[in-house]
Length: 325
Image 1 (cartoon, helix red, strand yellow):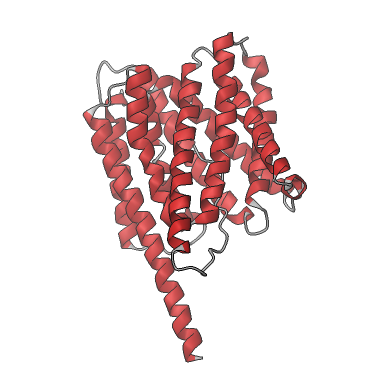
Image 2: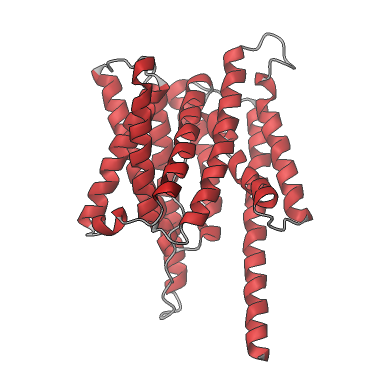
């Protein structure tokens, strides 16, 4: 579950190989962030018996410390703390924290690959919310991709829907609902971030999000935190540090390449989650999960492709208009 917005900087156009080398660096950093995020999720899942609110605290607090150390080493800590939108950070923090809680809860109820794959519904929901709430023009191609993506989500979730299947554990159905709820709120959080980065640095958004999540998670203490065993504590601290490192890698990937170039590599987590789930948790992917996951991934990649093509077409139109003038 990624928390960072994009952080793009102009790519130098001096040597002809520079853009290609920068893109390859961005892709490598993106894949690395996906691997580390997946490792974070695996460690949280391995810390069985720890309440969801406590999971959120360890992931947020130690991730926060990791980001603070990184910014301090780069001499950007003071710039990262400065903000023009405390209310915006608070709103994004609340929405993002609830989304994180729902995803971590889903991890405790579902196999790792299924929980990760259901999270792919988020980019589909971003398209829907952009059209409904932001009045963005979404044409037939993207609507078709969104519809196909949601069909894939239904295929993944079908065996867990007790309304249609007999003898399926209700815990699985609750896990599916939690995962889709996390994706829904994650989409809302991404739209909020999209507005905030017009005036806020990406590092600032991450700094205040993790600080807010750490504080909000402490409100769950009265609902029953447990004293983790040494092994659980290792998993929890490791997950927090891994989350912070993954966010840094993600932000750095967008500094080297356009989001549309590196975004499709998010879906490499499908293959990795299947491998990790099978090796460490004995999760055997079902045919429903594999077929539905491939449909969702194909839909997401098509949407990214259409966004990139539209961006290129708009840039060309502006260039032609400027030439004419």
